[in-house]
Image (cartoon, rainbow, N blue to C red; front, side, top):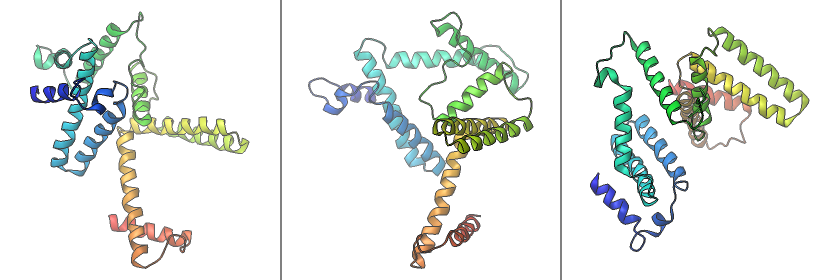
Length: 259
């Protein structure tokens, strides 16, 4: 870590550092951090360990970058980041670092969430932190929706079973149809969001991560579409020369090929 911290300090040196690194701010490197996090996820999903090793290094560098800028501003430095996360992990794992015992995973998860809630209350500038407080705005929308719903469910604001969730989706779809009939773009925009939010709720009730599920679906679509492209190229045909029924037949062939 000292080697990496020294490299970062050199890159940010006002006289001899890299001009690009010197002009960066906490806000300006946010997009790179998000990109690196997704590249880590992609390397894991691809099962590419060499790529994962590299991408983890890139992600770690982002943490070091933030810490260096904060150090220059007199706020904190990398060792403070390490101390903070270490203390947090010890505090949240009394069953490992103390004598706490839990009957099952459910009890363990409840204790974990209670510890996080207590931390949010302590860190909040108001008397009592909102139950939904601390869910980062920068999260992907599906991931954030699922986290918001999970927080609300902890205090009983949730459907008791799966069937009401399906009913809610059907209700929202009907409202979307009504908005479309009214040709009110703002209304359609709002109702489309309600449909997506309800689908995320269904994912949560099925214990399916909506973000991961959609990412997997995107990859599946990409594979099947590429299969159609390759088939058309082999036949020296184009999308434009094929009817929708013919393209659907190729899509079904791609599904079979995938299986």
